[in-house]
Image (cartoon, helix red, strand yellow):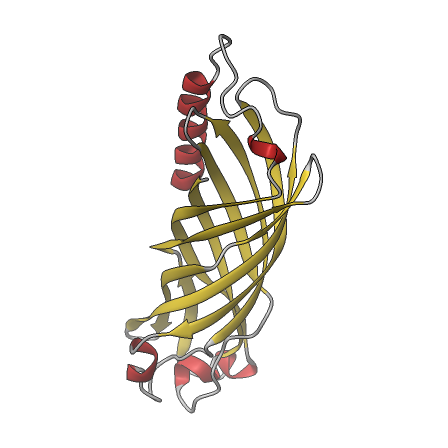
Length: 225
C-alpha cells in the first residue's frame, strides 16, 4: 500500500509543476458544465479483513493471515455538477482482484487465493477546493455496489475457500484536478471498505475457521475528463 501512496504523491508533484503556468488559465469554463464524462484507469492492492470463529481454536490451524495482492480496474465517469464545490459522480467500473489468505497448520501451510472480476457502481460525492490557476484539490466519498462476474466464480470447489458474489462498500478518497489545454487530469487515491460478510459457509477447514470476511482495497486511479 505504501508504494501506491508514494506513486500518487509523485504523480501529483510532477503534474502540478507542469500545470501551474501563470501565463494562462486552461479550460476556464470547464467547471460550469452541468454534466461531463471521462474514463478512469486504476491499480489496487486488495485483501480480506477477517474475523475468526470458535473452530479456529479447536482445529489444527495455527493462523490464518490475509495478504494484499495487486489488481487493476477500468471504467467510465459520469459527473453531475451540483454546486461550485460539489459534484455527484457515477463511475461504472470493471475491477480485477486477487485476494489471498495463508493458512498455517501444525505441520504445513497453504494459501487460498480468490481471483475475481467485479462489475462495480460507485456513487460518490466530490467536494472541491477553490481552483488556483490550473489545479484544485478534492475529497470524495460514498458507497459502491459490486457484483461478481466471469467464469472463475463457477470454477471454485466446495472444498476451497469461497466468497459470495455481491459486495457493498464504503469508499473514501482524496485527489487533485489538473487542468490542461484539452483535458482535465486527476490522480486519486481511494480506500474501499467492504460492509458485507463475503464468507461462503462451506464444510471445509478454510471456511469453518472464520466467521466473517470483508473486502479491503486501496486504489490509485488516474482520471481523464
